[in-house]
Image 1 (tube, rainbow, N blue to C red):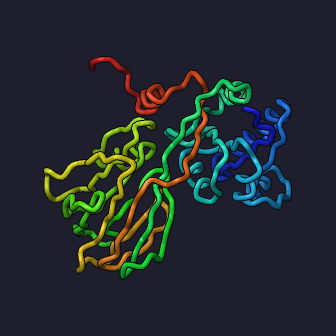
Image 2 (tube, rainbow, N blue to C red):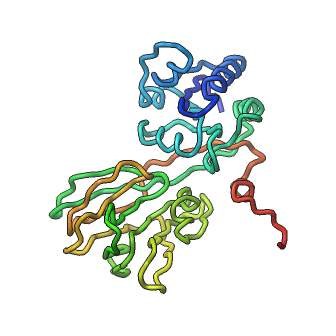
Image 3 (cartoon, one colour):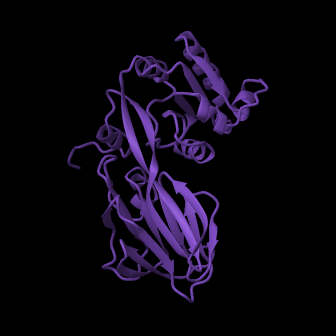
Length: 288
């Protein structure tokens, strides 16, 4: 890949962020790349920069994100599409979306810029909310869409249709619609399955369902999923990738489809998805 301009977005709240950032900048310039960054990242270097995250997305071919999965998700929501290729350098916790760490990033950067990389194309969710049959809000998610009970500790009723066919009315704390990327996040903790990135499906996972037979349902990523709170359900919230919630009114319809846009994550050639999965979930492969 001929990525002559490399963008950097760093999470300044992480311990050691500025030191690692300086080292990454030096490494990239040593490899002959132009390096750009947004205002917040520039401030960690003591520089005054006018670029926004959207500007960085538009101007670079490769974006290096310093932080964890949360930092990468935030960058995706603040950036613009079509997005550049994204390489995460993890100094967060799990880091399912990252391809390098503080100890091996220099080698990984060199290999990636030489074209020795795995490009993993990740599906996004396109979300539209209709009120009185009129679209009034839209968004995009990389991990998951969550319709939940909000602040009140009570079960809510959610009517779910797949491609216009009634699936069921869930009595639960909420519902998660996750991409393969998001299947290792909230959906996994709610009992959902792990999906391979190229599986071509989404998963619908109820949160603490009242009916024990309600389990995760895997649907084709070309499907249209609609979620509607029952007419008497107030206080229901919609959340994308754990960001600020949107309050839904009774009867609001949330329509979820695969986005026309995708995100291309970059991993070193020796790090396929199932190796990442084994490492991050600490599966030993041995009988206990």
